[in-house]
Amino acid sequence: MPLARAAAPSPAAASAPAPGALAPSDLRPAAVTLADVRAAAERIRGAVLRTPLVEPQAIRRIAGAEVLLKLDNLQATGAFKERGAANRLALLSARERAAGVIAMSAGNHAQAVARHAALRGVSATIVMPRFTPATKVVRTEGWGANVVLHGETLAEAAAHAHELALRDGLVFVHPYDDPAVIAGQGTMALEILEDAGELDALILPVGGGGLLAGCAAAVAEARPGLKVYGVEVQGYPAMAQRLAGQPVSVGGPTVCEGIAVRDVGELPFAMLRDMGVEVLVVPEATVEQAIAVLAENAKVTAEGAGAAGLAAILAFPALFAGKRVATTVCGGNIDPRILANVLLRNLLRDGRFLRLHLEIPDRPGVLADISARVAAAGGNIIEVSHQRLFASPSVQTAELELMVEVRDSVQGAAIVSALEAGDYVVRRG
Image (cartoon, rainbow, N blue to C red; front, side):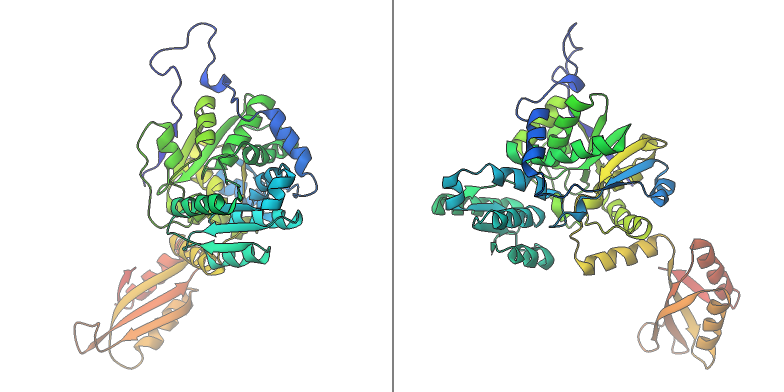
């Protein structure tokens, strides 16, 4: 399965740096500094949860690295977006508070702005794409916001939100292209650095780039030697493409709707480019695997974007093997149906669900014999489809499909062998 890595080009890519010149890793963004992030941390103290940093031993065994998880899925709205929204709304003037705010979001920024607007007695309008999961729409409305569903993409929702802001005189709260929001998101890095001790790398998901830019800016000054990586999913590598100087080409269905962004923030892009931050691109299937690994082995619920950091650790084992790394479960607002499907699909990939197709003689006792062979090998049949009339090539045969629960792929292979020993033709599918 192809993987990609995109590094930000050096400002002096055409030649080596002159003596005394700054290397890309030494560059500092002018827009957001460590002082801004520290001021934001003081400003949002008490309004935003200081989330725990945990090190599940089961994740360590699976990843082959010491993996620390920053559980920002425990925020009141279930995601890190609380940080940036709280800082931005705390800076509203009296006139802006009276006018009200508007934001566009696929869900987590929406809920964060809605919550902190409600806490401050400010009216909030949220424009969300029509594809937004129902869970996020309901929760946003639950915080008292007026939700407007418009457009098929975040870009279309953003355009409509800007139109409403101009028409109604509302303050637009951008989810990532705003210095106050970026500084607020960067408070996560401060907490990680305070709690983690020594680290080899910090790995963070990238949508519009606000979280990565804010955290990278804080790390660049607070701990200059620490490597910071961004992570995007294969269908939406907009930041990686921009940093590599390539045209942006994104699209397609993804479980990572929270980072399915076409138009990255110009300020985060400039900051990440100047700091030489590298963005890793991971396959969709690896994100699904990470969601399942977190649920089963860390007892943590993560949405697709929230599991992207762990997905990068799983997708690039040689990069992180044996190292002490931190990442974030930055959101846990996954639709229950999608979570259930992801877990089931992962069981199939791991070989713990066995899907078998058999062409069998159409005579009494055959189903009982097959069931007995599966049971003797320790399998549990959880679904049966038996078709006589249409699927079979002969009137004397029937098509049987079994879904069998097994411990692992070894037991699955034993069940197939037991069936083949009974002269059944077995096809795995």
